[in-house]
Image (tube, rainbow, N blue to C red):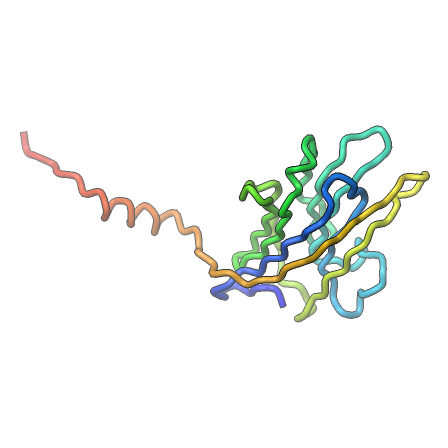
Length: 168
């Protein structure tokens, strides 16, 4: 199940695949009744490595069937350690092994399905375009969620760096 508002943990999925040869691969979180269907039509969260004819490859993030972000892949090494993080505040992050944020999105609403399943595929977009995925593994973990509260952060900084004000 995805984290809900108020949960204390984020969900992380780390994908281990051959970054040099992967093209037109999709990692989608879908409800149980969507298993085996076209991932785009049923996915709550959809991540793709797209490679279209005569175009640079892109990493794409779609949430609830709305493309929210694209990343032009100029160095396929950027895909190493690709990790999808779904946070209780609705933020969705795609990071890599260097902890760089590649893409970010947001859930507009909680999914209707309580439980989602991971559906992985490599599908040609048509026109004789190849699709390839050498998947070595997927790791699932739950990690502590630290809410980014700017007001709390400013209060903490002010408390740790007191200022001395003198009367002239």
